[in-house]
Length: 494
Ligand code: FES
Ligand SMILES: [Fe+2]
Ligand SMILES: [Fe+2]
Image (cartoon, rainbow, N blue to C red; front, side, top):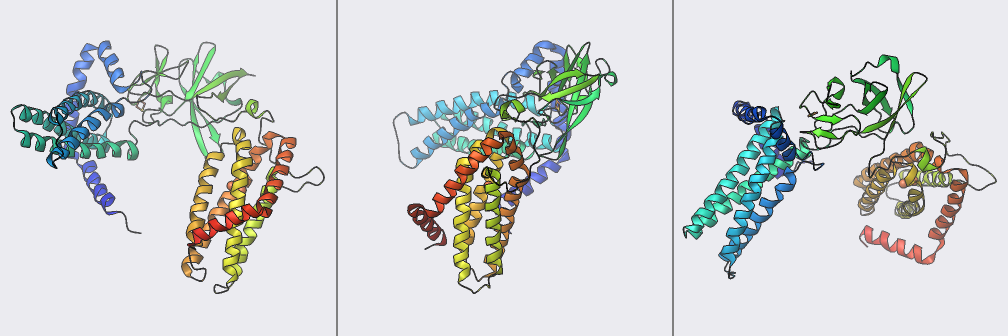
């Protein structure tokens, strides 16, 4: 598949900038020139630095401040453009000039915050940051020149200067986007695994030295990753927070203690041991925190919830604390559990895939089978979205990704339905759809259905009944069938 032209060219340009080592010398000289006075001033400069990073704000403030020049200068550019096209309005020139001045004030504030953040970048990130600053600095200079030209009555050249400045701002904005979205500058780098959800022994207390950070690892089975946690002993207390610094991923276990805070060895952010919040930047984001208890000479930790977390705990689930490894299996008598009903439906869908793949390409029955499959998939997603997922949501973190997978399945189904069932292209799409469905169903069976056991047997059986009724209703209701068929025909392209 061809890469998009603009992205390809931009990528090449970005690569060149990232390799431009000639930017390093002036970059480091500029950093030193900024750092020295701050070091001389001491604490007030540190406070100013924290204010500019956004340590008080919980996010970097640079992205918020750049909205001012972007908005104001774009407004001015629009007014100029309209005037040049003949849509003259009284006061438009004055408004454009005011907008340019307001944008310039915002740009100065954004530059100050950006420079504070830039000082803590290195290598290719710093080079991109340097060019980003140069582009935006040029944009600012051109807008200021525009104001001066306008004041001298040279409106045409004034407009030209601000239009050129606006174009520079776009380039600067693109580079800024690259720094955040690709290079991940300013985003949270901490590991925010919800594990361990219940207290888990991690280290004998005797092995933890006073004031010496020590890393332990816990396992997150969902992401199949080891998550580092740093333990710090202070007298009778043991504190625990994520070992990966939220600023840029520095190893906090290799840091040190200063004034009751854990210092990151990379850029010196200080995290309060009690709360995990940065008391000094450049970090703006709190570390993941863990509750600690001491049992039988062992340090035990449990992940602390954060606002907005959907962490699954035994208390929330109201059921067993651990995952019940009960595979979906039929159970006679008391009605089937929700996961058993869905598992059976997965099997039906898998058989339909097999039937289509076993049907000769030119057999018209393929199209009918495809419609049945589309219908069953739609019903399946409907009952899960409306009954199963909402119920399981408090006890499983798989629900958001399952919703995304449903969306992906329906997108892929829509593409497949449009194809002639006798073509190789259809075969390819069918294979992809089959693989996507199998992945989704298997992850439900191997993870979400197990987590659902926390809801308890009675609840699952009650839900199983609801699901069976809904499946029946979806299949037999004339209105539902007509509606579904119409949708499938529309997707096929009538
Ligand atoms: S990685 Fe930058 S302060 Fe920790
Ligand atoms: Fe599903
Ligand atoms: Fe499912």
